[in-house]
Figure 1 (cartoon, one colour):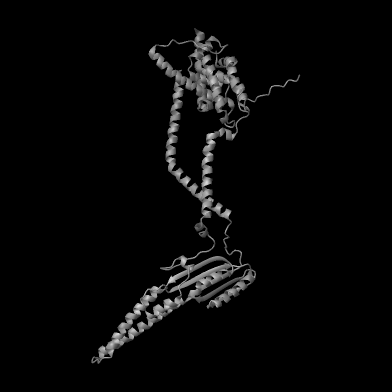
Figure 2: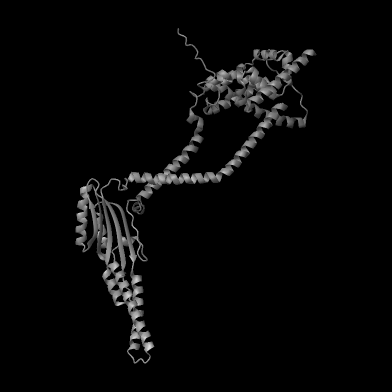
Length: 174
Length: 346
């Protein structure tokens, strides 16, 4: 019996949408998880992201950026739409009755101190941590996803890490 | 815990998508296209149409106009076929060069009699310059001989000629033909070679002749009155001397006017034709192109006009476009800041 070895996929320049999805599914999910701080929401948004990306795949231009950056950009847009709709929904519901905050599940394997510290960050701060630290995007790629300058990316990351460190160490002292 | 520790821990616990999500995405990728889209695919059908339709429209209009103008006989006659004809007359236009010219005889007869009756013919001067290209230097000599024979047949004569044969032959001949044979002469002479330039000038002389006639009549009447007075018994020698002086002046005036009238009428009796024959390839002959060439020329002219119109529209629309661009940029900036506020508050 002859086995056909799996075709090596180059994440930097995927030839098909299937290659791009396979290579970057975890990256997109991880980014959305950090952004929304909710696994179920991240799951839904990741699915919506890839559906949107599938429809827009004909417009992907490898010369303008990698497939990962492109997918993360779509993920961010999808997440922002969700945040806006969530904001409107909360305003309507809070007007009716105050909401009870629900503790969200987050990343498996994180220490409680770090998980708690991450929960205390804003979505914007978690987003920059996800892109630069977790997904290890360089400044330029992260800047493209966020639509800001690489300098602004570095500044935000620095603040987010500093805040994270303070929160973690505050928790440790308790 | 330092930042480095945090970074290490975060990277070690990189999230992984759930099985349900993988299944959902796998179902999606089974429908995926074969390859990374090319430029045309990236543009999308709508954008391709947006670009293709105006271009096709512009080319189509240019081609249709080019063909339509090519089929229009009026526009074919207006082609720059190296023939130019000018008429400089009060009552004659360029068309007179192609229509039969009135004979000078009847007009001259009417003018001599001083008649005031309306007549169909007017005294006119006719001057034409004709430049022709012939095959070679020998052809110049042959064409010049034929030109002289033609003038002779038409009852005209040569005023002056200069003929040089050789590799690049050249001939310049000044001809006079009776006015009523002028058109015939131009047509026959133009057949001697390929027309490079043709210039015909017709000038009306009748008004000038009529003015001379009026002045001659007035002078003759005045002279008759003076002669009648002188024929009577005049007792005053000084008065008689003044009358005689007046008589002499009127006679001189009559002589001058008659001489002017004669020379003006003479201009209308003979037409002058300057004939130039060349064998130089650089004579400037503009070949008349084929039908396809002419259609393409017209189409290019139309395209140039379309380009000018598009440029004018751009100039007019650019302030509006700038304003819209600024509005879009402002909205985008506002939206971005709004998103950042939203994420910062979440």
